[in-house]
Image (cartoon, rainbow, N blue to C red; front, top):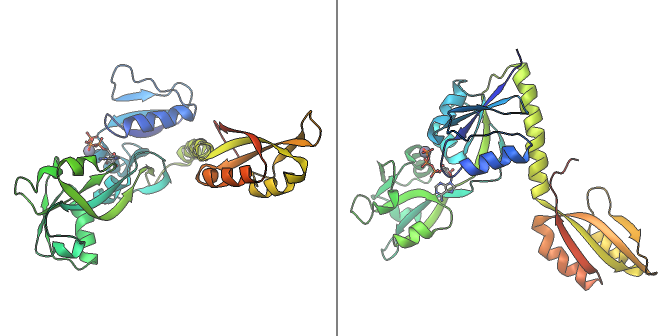
Amino acid sequence: MQTTLKIAVQKSGRLYEGSMKLLKECGIEVSNGNNQLRVQAANFPIEVFFLRDDDIPEYVQDAVADIGFVGENVVKESRKDVDTIEKAGFGKCRLSLAVPKNGTMKTAADLNGKKIATSYPNILNAYLKEKNISASIHEISGSVEIAPRIGLADAICDLVSSGSTLFTNELKEIETILSSEAVLISNKNLSADKKIILESLLFRIRSVKKAKNNKYVLLNAPNDKVKTICELLPGMKSPTILPLAESGWSSIHSVIAESDFWNVIQQLKANGAQGILIIPIEKMII
Ligand code: ATP
Ligand code: ZN
């Protein structure tokens, strides 16, 4: 019988879309039309289990699933014995301390002697210990942001992405205690066969991530500027230079990191580049 790798994905919620999209970009076809608990991929030896995100670290630890996509915040809070093998590039958020906007507390140190509501008691406790802050933790499982208003706590420790939930609840963020994104976690004792499937999945995930972080650039430049422009665009090996039909001009092709993009574009223009085209890359294998 062919070995299948069991992957846990959040059943519904903030990580569902990102997880399914990444599998799709990796060329793995999973149809979850009937809201099933488990689905075998059509063209890759993987079976997807749809679960609550909080259960994923435990299921992976206990080998109910071999690997899973879950937030780093959940992995850290759960304290399960699993390997974190790759950042997934979606589900970015932060676990922060927040206090009433119009109150007197301004820094984490002001939380001494106060009560903090959170769904992340383990992470918060470790943070308070490390910072030598003596505060009591009130654990609640949802709607943490309303705790100060109803008199349940003085402050909160909760997940934030845009900050709009804090804003509507008249809270302000005073400290980030963990930056988080979805990660791929793995059981620590995968069989050799499963490791081979995981390597092949990881190769695809890394190619997709690399492609997302880079763009293909095409531009025209006068020949006397080609050398300077190439120095600005190192590319994967070195840029491709092709002569244009118009003499004295060349077309330069290269790859540029998304993070450098705006900075480099300015310099390219300043050095005489024209007709600059930026094209998304679908997969990138180096
Ligand atoms: P489940 O029903 O599976 O238990 P949930 O309500 O606990 O779902 P979601 O709100 O869907 O979970 O969040 C899942 C994960 O998405 C979080 O653990 C976190 O890693 C990530 N995330 C990204 N942005 C945010 C945000 N603004 N608020 C909460 N979680 C976020
Ligand atoms: Zn959850």
